[in-house]
Length: 198
Image (cartoon, rainbow, N blue to C red):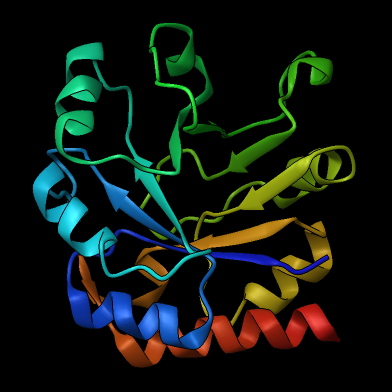
């Protein structure tokens, strides 16, 4: 099975094109006002319009209100919606949009874990490592996409340690908060692909 590689928090066309050209499978568009990667729905829609068939557009939020979701959906229709697992209990999404719940620790009842989950650090987008031990326990049962502090230098170790379905990076491919570096994007994807085939 091919490792899914997601580049999150893109705000510029040149970085998006670099990610796609290097073989990214999914692109995350952040809708969270306090994030340096925050986008307007119209800007996200314009960027997503550059994606070729087969590359997923993912809306990324953090504890959004239902009206925030509606505002995004007025202009932007993602393939998947990523937010903390508990958020989905009060959000209604149109059919056809996949749900990617974010977990930050091993749940008390592992049987409640959905078929596909994101696993992140306690705070997203800060370059902090997730709990790889907890992630490994989930990855053995579900399609787990690992985030949290990954970069080109540690992604191979993360893949070996966790055995994830996919990997997700944001700050690890930036030159400064919110500013993606094309060379770092290419290096991350190359390292992930190399580890996948090892």
